Image (cartoon, rainbow, N blue to C red; front, side):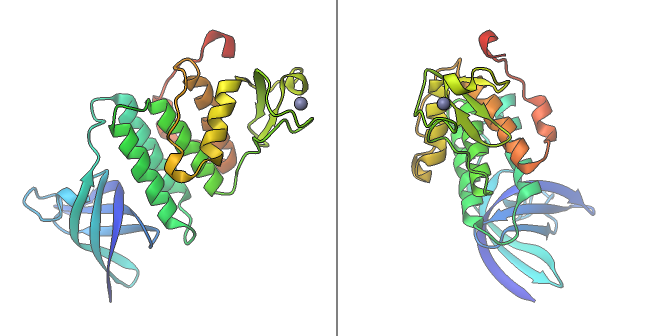
Length: 251
Ligand SMILES: [Zn+2]
């Protein structure tokens, strides 16, 4: 039997037995842990709060024969302030779905926890639109998984920027107005290219620190959502509930 303590975020909860829970915890140094929390559904249980969805805790676990149990959950932060916005809570669920299906076993686990905590922080706050937070999550997640798009310049002629550009979601390549003109690739305004460059090339501390005109956010989102789905070769159930309109000239 092994006992250990690690901080982590609850990204999925299901029920079992009469009053128990099973939790999926995205931890800082042990990857994704699926653990039993005995009695946690009881409102008087000391595990009740700490084993709720979107709760960040210092967890104590014990493991025996590859089965994990939560023995303690000291709450550090609860992300709940987005519950008045359907889009925000659905976006948070989408982030969990991406993590649950793609969590690598043993690479940079701390990065994934950090990306989740930061994304939830900005979803709960009101400074950043949810579409912006979603795009940052999608592009940084893709980069960490080894799918960094090449956004430095036009892949064909090396032009740094033109007032509109084209992006190939399948290959992760950028093309200038001239080279992309006769392709069937989505056309994107320069502001969206700049936003993508910021997300991909800035230090993690600054990757959410940019603004984009509201009419450009759906265009950025169409690109990042499609790019991540292409990279992971996966579709996500939660996305069916997230609707947003593209401006007419970008359809
Ligand atoms: Zn070009």
